[in-house]
Image 1 (cartoon, rainbow over the protein chains, first blue to last red):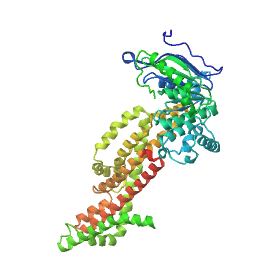
Image 2: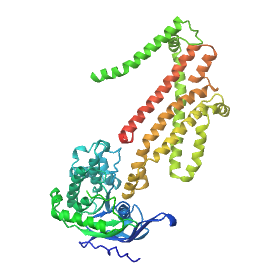
Image 3: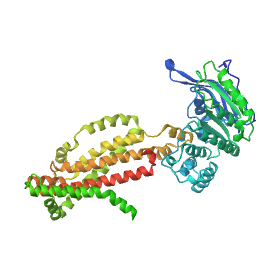
Image 4: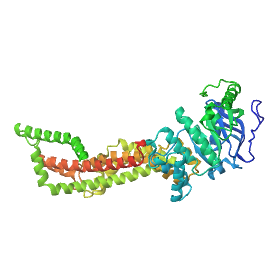
Amino acid sequence: MSAPATVPGPVVAHGAAVAVEVHGVSRVFGRDGTAVAALQDVSLTVGAGEFVSLIGPSGCGKSTLLRLVADLDRPTAGSITVFGRSAEQARLAHDYGIAFQQAGLLPWRTVRANVELPLALHGVGRAGRRARADHLLELVGLADFAGHFPDQLSGGMQQRVAIARAIAEEPSLLLMDEPFGALDEMTRERLQVELVRVCAQTRAAVVFVTHSIPEAVFLSDRVVVMSPRPGRITSVVDVGLGAARGDGLREDAAYFDAVRRVREALHGGSDVPSRGVETR
Amino acid sequence: MRRSAVALGRVAPAVLLAVALLAAWQAVVVVGKVPAFLLPSPTAIGGELVALWPTISGAIGVTGRNALVGLVLGAVLGIGSAVLAGLVRAVDGLVAPVVAGLAVVPVVALAPVLYTMFGAGSELARQLVAAVAVLVPVHVNTRRGLRQVRQVHRDLMRAYAAAPGQVTRTVTVPAALPFVFTGLRLASSLAVISAIVAEYFGGPRSGIGSFITTAAAGSNYARAWAFVLGGVVVGLVFYGVALAVEQLVRRRSGPATA
């Protein structure tokens, strides 16, 4: 399994501890005649506490890669370890929290019961669940809506509930698949700031799938740029804007520079036009 | 005060219309000297209803009981078979054609056969007819309800490493419930209709249907109409209760699924 020339070797994290280790992973959908390689020989390492975004045009396999790490899907080839164990063991041990593009709240449960869901499934007592849910709803600014049902909330509020649910068990790894993809730009920027704050408190490693360059740059320590057909990593951009991210950062020269570098990586790193990538 | 006034305002037109229609009916029968076998007057029907109330209420009880037994039996079988079909693919293959077959069988046509099977003194035939009529809509709706789990919820349950029982309790059943109760609401009317019509084909002289045929055969049309009113009462009660329960379940399972 030799790596194509365009793919850099395994990306090494800054920190010593490793959260996610993806090694030579491929995922092929379908059979012989109609087989589609969603991912080909992808290797990536995410350090503990590190925020890594996966960015690329539609069909580059970024969501597939996230689903493989979450063990919602199995690789055709290669190996994935999460905190030193297999992806399946990590899932069974509740090692990660997850959020999707759809908030995916249960409409028949209150906001509080939705946040409590993973705790209830994993046997946390009633009092403990309640205290934790109250704290989390405070954290995402929805303490006043604990008794509401999801359909009484706006899309942005629902997504905040989904994030509270994802971090309910204080996971050391957060997997997020375009969680702000369906939101308007203003809500999206506000939630980005909130996410940075929440991550700073929980010290969790994050793998964040997005197709927005500014979003990836604002949030991430590193941005992994991918290209489609077959899905592979074309380059990795170190952003390194520091831990103190606020809205002011969006006007900063270093921020613009990082946006430029990611954009160049997206356009230069693939032999097909990277349509489908938002440049806003 | 205000609320009751508003409720009155909503109900009043319907009540007024009903009163006006009854008055017109009475006027047509009296002024036009319509013969009783063609159309009895509302007062004549009302008189029979009062005079025969002990018999009518007894018949309501018998028919209502038959419909209820049929509804419960049919619901248990319909929901049970749908759950089994959802769990085991082989059962799905077996059950689907049977249900399709039942759906096209005119169930009440089975009544005379069943009376022969279970004896002319038994209510069982009527209850079975109602049960078979109920089974189909309940089964079909439950089956559809069990397929309502969204992919994102499925992924979420897998990510949480939830046990099969937890998945069933947390997402499958709540998503299916509104559909099950819609099936039950549709079935509740069918149960009453089937129980009454099954009585037309024989069996003990105990329920609404058998009294309607007897009264009509004896040219006692006002009495026949009074028993029809009894049948309306049974139907209304079943439908009203089923509708109320359905609304309750829908509210509890979140307006988003409505």
